[in-house]
Structure formats: structure tokens, C-alpha cells
Image (cartoon, rainbow over the protein chains, first blue to last red):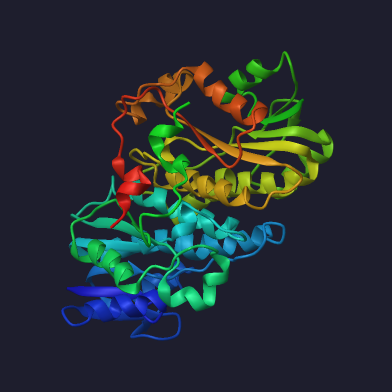
Amino acid sequence: MKVLIIGANGTIGKKVTAALKDKHEIIKIGKTSGDLQVEISESASIEKMFKKSGKVDAIVCIAGDAKWDKFDNLSEEDFYIGIKSKLMGQVNLVRIGRKYLNPGGSFTLTTGILADHPVDKTTSAAMVNGGIHSFVKAAVLELENGFRINAVSADLVEDAKEKYGEYFPGHTPVAMDKVTDGYKKSILGKLNGEIIRILPNFSRNLNMGDVFLLKLP
Amino acid sequence: MKVLIIGANGTIGKKVTAALKDKHEIIKIGKTSGDLQVEISESASIEKMFKKSGKVDAIVCIAGDAKWDKFDNLSEEDFYIGIKSKLMGQVNLVRIGRKYLNPGGSFTLTTGILADHPVDKTTSAAMVNGGIHSFVKAAVLELENGFRINAVSADLVEDAKEKYGEYFPGHTPVAMDKVTDGYKKSILGKLNGEIIRILPNFSRNLNMGDVFLLKLP
């Protein structure tokens, strides 16, 4: 299988690449590193990347920026950083990528725990993650050619603990092989239209508000 | 209580206004109708509206556009219609509205069933609704002055059945008083950080994927 991974050199991307590279051909994409480069906030850059890569069997995005800051500090323009990159960047990858995906191919997008359980300073980051969740659920109703689409939404991951742990008090980091399993499930399995949530264990205090049934008035 | 309702003349807004007007002072806002006008996709227009309204006790938004069309037909620009209006329009209402909300006041935003259960042609509309859900959950962590924030997410509402029913096959319309109850819960109650889902009954086929627990890998 020919797998294009955007963010192949990132914290999660590295491990996903390593987990797939023995049995699959990986096209590594980065902003500045990798086999090819892309700036996902620009449609023209996405189109250019696909023209160079040619057709693939799986398009995986483990990239996308959003500004983290106090809600008080975030300007309207700051919100558009995440909107252009992690939100519309991933939507555009699907819009444009359909032309470069072989029949039966898959899209795997990346969101994160913030969509369901935001932390301080993440009004913008949570918003774009939540937007992608609903986009995936809507896009699956319309994709053709046997295309599949899923999003992987992990809690704080082990390899990011040092860098981001302080933002996530009480979040038990998820082991990296559990995270890569989430991506494998989407890329190699048959799941479709799913938000693949990767959580450390069952002990998290559930916000029961998340349970649809209990929200009925 | 002084309640500012954006979209007061809309399908849902009319009923919410009617349900509150006997006991509360309502400032009705519309694009072209109402006591004051606003174009929520423009921050300057929002600021201007609040300067005229002065301080209020509740800011309610039952407005916001997004383009409905086949994913195949939606251009990048089309997605930005919803992003600028229903998504960032509501975020900006909260950003800017904080200055015009009395201590202990509330924000009530509007999303809809599409966030959880999209239908055909709603990749953009679902996306902005999902974005607002996560935004609400993040904003509640940071709002000060005793401010509360919730979103009301109704299924197809009775009064929109004629106009939109064909887009929602099998969706049992929700009675309007049930919908207005959702807004009352947010405006007059103590709920905070909640997505108040208004569904017709318990018989909906649940997408168990929505149930957080069951998504664990």
C-alpha cells in the first residue's frame, strides 16, 4: 500500500511511519522535511504536493496548527490560524486529495482530546478539533469510490509528555504503540466515518454530558 | 432580566422571544428586522450592536449561516461562509459580548443535530456546529465574572418541517415548546458549559459511536 503521511517527522508521525514502513511504501511529507513538502493551510501547496506524489492508497494527516492562548488574548485573527491550518487544511486535503486517492483508499485525519475535553487556553484548538469530528461524520455520507474517512483523537501522548504535559494536568499519557494502533485501524482496517478515540485507560472521569442519551431534556 | 436575542424574528427565535417576553425585557436583533440590526459575520457590526444595546443579562444567538451543498460542489470559499458566520460569528459574539454582559450573565449559542448526526450536503454546516460544541466546552473553563455559556442543539424543529423536512429523512420533528425549553434552561437556569440537545424522543437510533466509553480501542 502506498501511504502518504503529512507530518511524518512529527511526534506521532514518526511512530506511525515506523509502524508501517516495513510492509508499505511511505511518502513522507513535512513542512520543510520529508520526501515532499506541503503547507496545509494553502490549497495551492496541497495541490502541488499531490501532483508530485501521484496517486496513493492512503492519505494520512498528522499535522495542523492552532494558536494556544488564553481566550482573553486570542484575537479574531488568532482563531483563523487554526481555521486555516488544522481545520480547513484537513478539509482541503480531503477535497483535493480525492483526485489522488485510489479506489477504496482512505483518509485519516488527526484531532485530539481537546475536542471532547478541552483544557485551559484551548478555545481555538478545541474548536478546530470539534469541527473536524463533525466534518468526518458528514463527509462519510458523501464520499464515493469506496473511499473511507476517519479521525484519530488521542489524549496526551507519551512522547509529548515532556513538552505539553503541564497543559494537561491529570492526563495519563497514552503509550505510543496504542496511538499508532489507532492510525493502523483507520489505514489498514475497514472503519469508516469514525472518531477513533485513543485514551489511556477506563479510569478517566467521564463527563457524562458526552453520553448522548443522558442529554435528553 | 434584559435578554438580547439575535435572530429574534427567525423560526426558533420567534418562539423563544414569545416564551420570555412577558417576564423579561427582550432586545430583538435581526439582520434587517428587530430593535437593532447586526451582521454577525462582521466583528465591527457586533461591536456596533452592543454599543447601542448597552449592558444585558443574557446574550442569545439563534442565527448564523452556512452553505448547504454536496461536498463535490462546495468550494473552499463556500466553507468560509459558515466559518465566518455561524462559527466565528458566534465566537466573536462571546469575545466581544463579554464587555457588555452583566456579572452572572449568560451566553446561549445555537448549533443543531448536524454536529452529531449530519445528513446529506452538510459537510460545512456540520463542521461549524461541531466546532461550536467544542468551543463552548473550552470557553467555560476560562469565562470570568460568573458568566455562563451553553449551546442549544435541536433536531429538526416542528416549524421548519415544511421548509427543511426533506433534508432530514426520518427525523421526527421536535415540538417548539420543547425547543424553547432548551433555551430557557440555558438563559434562566444554572447550566454551564453544556450542549443542550433537544431531541424528539428516546426512540432515535443512537449512533453508539457517540458514546465515549464505547470508543475505547
